[in-house]
Length: 228
Image 1: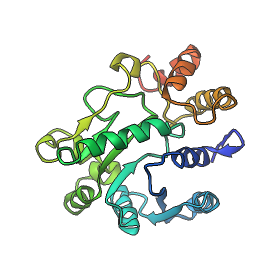
Image 2: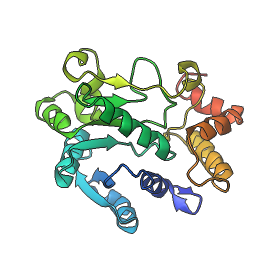
Image 3: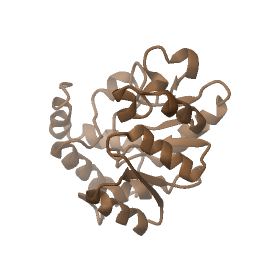
Image 4: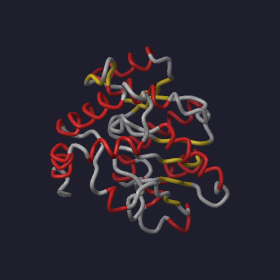
């Protein structure tokens, strides 16, 4: 709900996803908690669908959202990635379709080495595969983090996850664009305010350059994760 330009963080994320022509639609998966009514209000204002489920069982909530849309492919973007790059999402969807018969899951940040800075996370997977995971998964990690069973140790033989690289791994550890702390928000807002007047749908490359041009703010975000 924090402001970003003349919108909110969530509103900006939704608008950026709407630029992805390969998507049939955007759905917000939020909770049944009254505190999240304001998020549903944003979904309505942005004219996207929403699904409300458990706060703790995120896997079940995402499964419910997929069932409500009858989707066969899911592109999962978490709400802490407001500067999601539409062009990167499109590229990941194309990557998925190129190897769909082999790879049930394609991602850019969950592999053994980073393929993009955190905050640009894109995961694409077969909806039916997630439905099977939801029916089988009983461990807390899977219920909370949804897609972990696709890529954790031992998953390769079943789901054959594929990890796509957009940036060198060493650069991915120099930039943090995910929103968890106030320091993250200040950096994200600075990048957004700087780049939007020139290109409303600015891409990942411009974001990385803008972050590196603010070394103190970027270092503060990395330090919170023990990376600086």
